[in-house]
Length: 399
Ligand SMILES: Cc1cc2nc3c(=O)[nH]c(=O)nc-3n(C[C@H](O)[C@H](O)[C@H](O)COP(=O)(O)OP(=O)(O)OC[C@H]3O[C@@H](n4cnc5c(N)ncnc54)[C@H](O)[C@@H]3O)c2cc1C
Image (tube, rainbow, N blue to C red; front, side, top):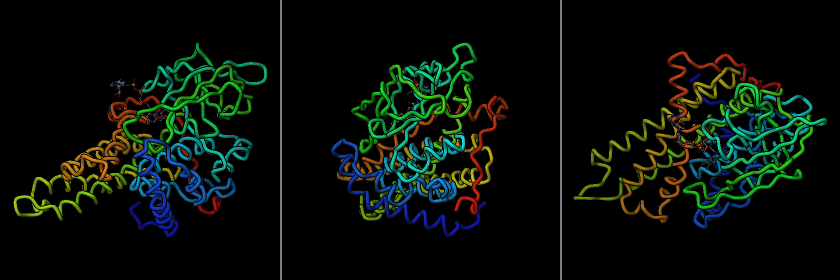
């Protein structure tokens, strides 16, 4: 598992780093202006990153899942919104279709997603159900030629920008909560779909976040993803992928915090000596260095499991929890090291700190991840036997 990165993985890392640097000014300016940055998805698409780990036969780059983690770290080292676009579009949406779609659904939807001609989003969170999505109240009523969707999804990344959404809704009110949901691929131009923005976010200001409403929206039966009743399982499997990218991205935040801390602590003198010589400062830097290495090890492990087609729910949940908690701690320590300088948007740490705060909230709050980990530790995970692994990476078949 700890063998050197392959040539392809290093190439992906370098590519993502250069794209992120190219977009730095754009996202920083957009964050400051409090409006979504323009051209990010197009730039990611032009490098092939929006279809990074989809097989070439579906228009992707044919890279493995570890390359996806490495790209996420590079994107987030510049700005978390760059990574979130990739997480939502590729990990939560396109990989869901790759994993659960029929061959004709894959052929119909994936090439345009892989090339970035269409953007995808993920609609699990209902107005009334975030941490407990099994009890969401969006509905999908079966009719002769498909389903009629009604409901309101809130806090949906890319709402107002994306062209399609994986929409999770209740098809059976009588089944146990998590067995009564189904998943749909829904074009946002369909009659009855409306979207709007959520204003005033703490962070991630350089990207769209909003709500999506369905009012008597008709979807054909052929756009249901997976079987009826599999919606909860599909959503959780998509989250295994999303959480992986969130965790890997957090390594980028820690790296950026460490870099800024080091530069400042080495040049700023107090009481006649550089800050870097003070043990209380060294302790903060040591924590960042430790947490960067641990996060990286955890995401390499999760990427390795994904490449082998092995279940990784426990590992990706642990990664997401550990990585996002320590990324925010690192951003906070870096801001503290910079003192008053850090408390202003003249320094990037202010933006990084605001962006890092959401890590403990989305893709399962970190309280929920503690419950998941306790469940595994105590041998009480009912979903542990569900089959929901991604297709294993196959270098020959994907290229
Ligand atoms: C910027 C952003 C982007 C997002 N993007 C998406 C997206 O693209 N798609 C999508 O579907 N969703 C998205 N979300 C929604 C996100 O997944 C939810 O906000 C999250 O699941 C938490 O749900 P909630 O906000 O309703 O909090 P609640 O479920 O109401 O929880 C409130 C608090 O109570 C705690 N809590 C809840 N239950 C327990 C318990 N049993 N024990 C202890 N503590 C508990 C929670 O941890 C939290 O701290 C996004 C959210 C944000 C902020």
